[in-house]
Amino acid sequence: MSSLHQANSDLQCFFAERALLPSGWANNVLFSVKNGQFYSLETNSTATDKANILSGPVLPTIANVHSHAFQRIMAGAAEVSLNPNDSFWSWRDLMYKIVQKLTPDDAHIIAKQLYIDMLKAGYSQVGEFHYLHHDIGGKHYGQLAEMSNQLIAAADDAGLGLTLLPVLYSHSGFGGQAPNAGQARFIHSTDSYLTLHQACAKTLANHPIHQLGVCFHSLRAVTKPQIDTVLQTLNASSNTTSPIHIHIAEQQKEVQDSINWSGQRPVEWLHNEIGLSDRWCLVHATHLTETERQAIASSQAIAGLCPTTEANLGDGIFPAVTFEKEGGRWGIGSDSHVSLSIVEELRTLEYGQRLRDQQRNRLYRPEQTSVGDNLYQQALLGGNQACSVSLGLAVGNRADFMVLDESQPFMAASDNKDLLNRWLFATNENLVKDVFVAGQQRIKNFHHEHEESSRSAFIRIIKKVMYDA
Image (tube, rainbow, N blue to C red):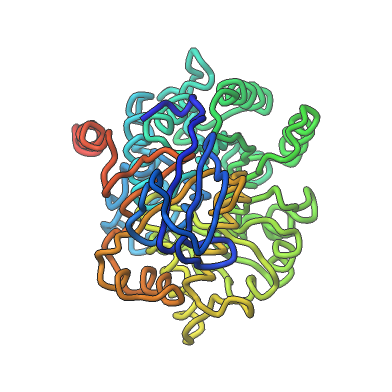
């Protein structure tokens, strides 16, 4: 495979018996790729001699809107009850302990394996919400962006598009409370954050499938003057379209702490004091009033939903049914990576709504009554917006797509109108057989070219970090 830094200037042709286009499923689709983008597309066509035959249903890959790469190493390690009132906050204590053990090399190895596994799941872009910045003592590395550079290198090695979201994290609680010892590796001042952001922008300038966004950890971790200064400074440098991500309203304790501090709930405060727009991705946004929910929907901000992590942490259930009816936009992320399955994220999202409402088939729209098709379409569109990419099988978009395994009985037997529902609600095995990113094949017949060496290195890091004294 060629480097991500090299544009693919040769015209490649592909043929799919069925492919999911923005208008819906189409048959006998012939398309070409040039310079990493879809160059032409014809339906009801025939394969040419030079076309690569894609043996299985072809779908656009999607963007994973929310990731903390280093947390992958602790997936499944916090499922032991040490407290009758276990919650997000007790889980966070374990995360802080693990953070103290990670070197830059460790972070690279963890991220590379994670990004390979994301590709295998059908993600081709990730919003990396990155706050592990400094050394174990909390001091800056010689290169301020050392840990960010490790993530960029890992994404390059895997062949995954990266939307890097370096995080401003300065405080431990609302109103500018001093950070605690467990947060030492995360902390930046406003000035050092802007210097970090500038360094990341310089590095990413030569990475055509990577993007750079702005990120505030949470309203607990920053102040209004910090948010204002960062946005004003970056907007003044013409960075006016990059996405802005923030954790918000994930836990009831956070909501109550916000009220105690300001008299306003988190989303209410952000809407009133800063202002929402379609640049924002509000990660989780689980606990909302009707007014807050409508404010997000009307602003066209993305709700960054992470259903498997939210279930794992006991966060609560996002009001997705009403939010969709109000025209709200959402994407999915794997967050702490207890799951790396698009199927499981979307299924968990839908099933959570069913369990709460005690009804079936909750997330659909008048124009799309198939739940599976609606879920996939909204995840695609929301991921594009939150990660500042253009994925989808259409001329001009980046040529990212995946092929499902047509030997699986439901894939082989289903017609187009049932295929996504069968995939999302009737299968448990991974059916993502092939994945292409910017026209380059990264997963071939379920395998990545670096998977063996990456897996061995990852096993070594798990043992070192989690089990060695």
